[in-house]
Length: 115
Length: 459
Ligand SMILES: [Zn+2]
Image (cartoon, rainbow over all chains, first blue to last red):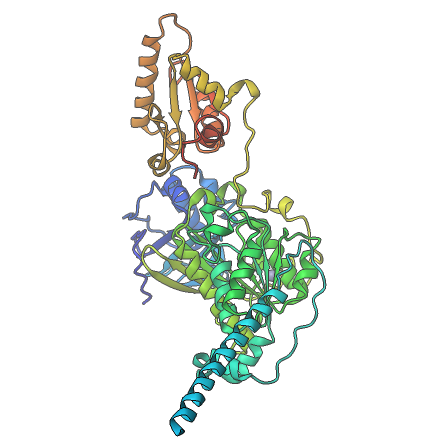
């Protein structure tokens, strides 16, 4: 079982207990997620396992408040956001096709450029 | 008799010690005078770094505490002295990086920055002092480094890294450290490192967060492998807008120094295919496994489409600086100058001054009669803020005996957000709000401080 205890943004999802972490600059997370740190949500059950593509659509419909362009572009995340699944780059896990598992930890990071 | 002899001997010894001390002082002074640093405003070929085959007694004493480490040892120390490192950006990351590399005995340091030292840099750019304000950062950093270790060769570059000069410069160094502050420069440095086969130790910091990765190193990804497309410019926050706690880039710059030293001494870096994330708020580090080098990468892939440096400002849609860019969203009749606003105040004409900065900035300084509603609240149509605005516009309308549209002047720090707010309020005027006449105060509070009230703080 993977543990992911950075409880900044926690969601428990029907069928899966997932944790989402959003490392965005504060203005973006305020616009996107109302600055709320913890959510309890229920994802409707479905016969096939959830994959990342469906999850992004679900996040967009259920969690994003406005300005979705700060988070998504097309069916993926916008350029400059790195997605991690259980502390690994999602490119190593199949990106949009990755099938979610119970206890997965999904992290969204926006790249920093300052120095 | 023998007493006299021993007394004279003691005096002689005393004088000899004095002479030795004076000679030492003289040689140090001469050394620092002959090594007057030459500020480079263009890239010129450097002489190859002289290979050191053995450590001098002075080296052994100076580096003794790290020579004792089996991980480094004499061989590692000699390797350090043979290595040249180019530091792109002498700011919050570059300062601690240069400091530790010089202290550890790196052979040559190229210090590049096109900027001059400003007072608002000093909280994080710890090589520069108050007396260096106005001086080229590259020179100020080089002088500080030289005071620390005069055996390190310093090459200060006061220039902007560009597609024209980057390859020639980077080819002359063994390791490159990206300590820059903007997206186009990050792509430029990465591409130039791929094209010249150099490892790139890259870090960044903003607010309370830091990130670090070593690119183009032992089969790991380059910057483009990870970020094939640049982020939309409106999603990028820079330090001059977003702020940064000085110690955060300090910690990340120290991490860069550690990885450079490991690569240079021959131990190898741990971050070739890893991203280190630092959350200063929770004092937590996360290390993330990254993808390997991507076969489809535009620059380091199997069939690269980028085979020479390109126009990175065009590629990213933003300028290679972290300074605030001026927006031009409004026509001339939608804007007034800070001096115009001063005459409106002097004439005591009824109006509303709306300050659209975030609260944290209003706490720093504000005009006492302004109403603060942050731009984000307007964008999100926050009901309590809209209600407040309607009330104040209503009051104003009652004050204005002759009727007409109540004038609203919008101000922010530099006059960008206020233009967005004017556009927004014009849309709301007559529907979500009573009819109003909205104008932007061009250049914002910083223009007010410069042209009307020099006692008003600038930040
Ligand atoms: Zn690449």
